[in-house]
Length: 409
Image (tube, rainbow, N blue to C red; front, top):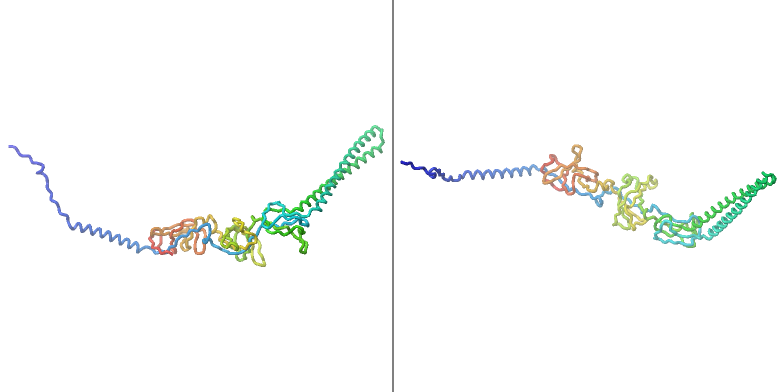
């Protein structure tokens, strides 16, 4: 009798589906709600613990100046020419020709005027004739001296042969020495005549008045027919010069600064000048020198200010007002990328200057480089960029990374 084999289907265990438990859903919902409440509580606590700070925006200081530069002194003065001359002759003479007009540009050595040279030319002709006569006399004496020396040599030979007497020898020797002395004197006469000719030639050259340097004629003081003299001759009929030449490249400003404020001025200091004739034109200048003496009567010290760039509109004797800028604030190396922040935002920590910058709602500690102070502001050359928010009067508890709540200044 054979036994039947069990099938695999008979060995399968059937599982009935278990219905989802309702308490499990409620537990999940409660956990999510708890997490949300914890996040809200954390956010509320963070906001409640944020430090309230007052902030200001860092301002860029441009090297071009403008309103950001700090003026330490205002003064007034005049445009002057460091190099100018009233051109005259070396001698008194009558003007025959004037070749200049006001505003004319002249070169160094250019002829400006001529004086009457008729008398000088006559003297020059006499000097030339005297020189020629002296040279002719010198040539005549030289020929006579040559003959006398030859005669002396013949007589000396005859004396040695005992053909001629000693008296003939002495006479020949005396004639030779006499002519030699005359030749020496005539050579001196030629030298005198040459120097006299040169002197008269110089006098003739002095009748031509030339420009001592290149410049512009500002005044024409003489006319043909007038007398001029290098010194005042009294009365009103003798001029002391032909005209005035000014070197426009030497224009500068001359200022009398009160003694009480001279400590605000230093050589090389930046200055902004404004001509009364052009009130809207700001001219960059700089201090050339402070004259090391004071005026006892006016209690002032003279200061020379030079133009950084000359312009044809700048003329001698113009009135000008100047503003002296603080030396450190005009240093291009200092202010090229500098920013201004309130002084109260800068603090000292471990020997370093620091500020707190607000970024993404938190305070960030920054080390900075302070280069100058301008009123209530500090000038920073490193550590902060323009536009960043800086904490003013840092409150207690402010530290790097602390959450802050800002109020703008």
